[in-house]
Image (cartoon, rainbow, N blue to C red; front, top):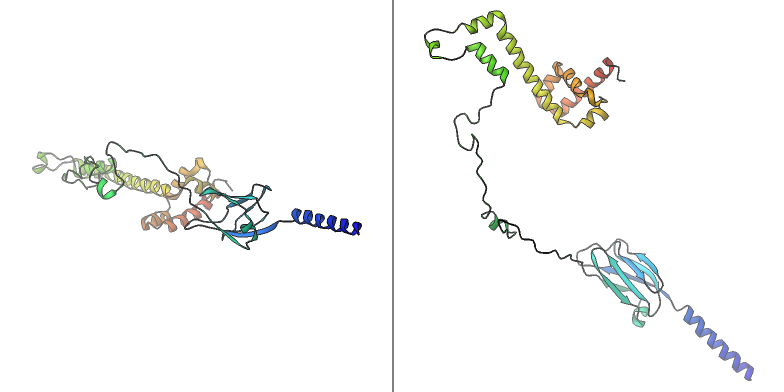
Length: 265
């Protein structure tokens, strides 16, 4: 009889110890927030050192036992500790609301205008200096384009330098310039200057890396390639159209011819 009683005592003690060892469960829950993402929140059982990360909806599952402590942390939330009480352990699902972390910045005073941050008020406090230009001063011909040096020389060669004597005696320089070909030469120079200016503008449309990687033009050959394009009528027509896709298509075709003629392929 005593042996049976002793065996029962040992059995119940063993059962208690076994139950104590295995008294853990997989706790399921969800992290919630009013307006912040709940994905990627770290859920750590600091007692067992286990850790998991929430999914896109804030769900998590972690093994716990009574008296463990769970810590929830993320860069955009305040750190939160949750003790595993008996009631929490017995629950099937737990929701953990998180509080947004707000980084308080020190007050900054903007001088010399002491701006408030309200644009409707601050705009009247800022005093802007007036733009001193021909347009701002409403001067005559302020919006007229300034002619280039070649254009000024062509005008002078064509009409002569103005003076009061021109009213009574027409100047001979325009006639002489026309006979000697100077006027024609200056017209060609104006045309060349115009083409060069357009070519420089087109070159600025595209990064140098595009010339090197797409057109396969070496960096030190880009200017020479642009002159190669400049003398082509198809290129000039594309430039006049101001259609950048059309210009680029012409440059692609010209790049093949340029590479072939310069042995770059």
